[in-house]
Length: 111
Image 1 (cartoon, one colour):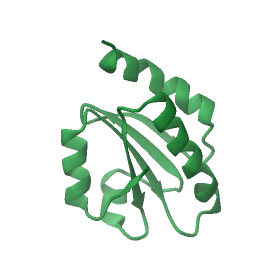
Image 2 (cartoon, rainbow, N blue to C red):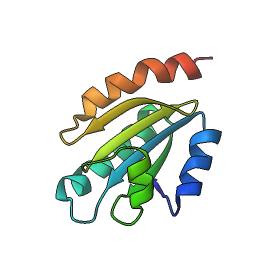
Image 3 (cartoon, one colour):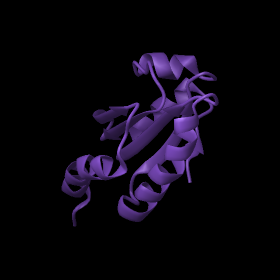
């Protein structure tokens, strides 16, 4: 479900070209991240299928984390039209995340 980002350039390109992007920043040492990631993947696939979910290992790609001012794991950033719209860190509730994504998502993707 998540596409693992391999470089800063790849991240920038996706941010610029995708109308909606969810970036999940984490490290291998983060146990909370491992539990939360599949829940976020399920939320995006069921409720927000037009959002492209990407996974960034902050310890492997510190430049991507630094450019996005990521200081803790997990951190979720949601971009709409290349602009950061939502930022969640540490204690992230799935229902709260769903509520926050819903409004901008349906404003952009309503038909």
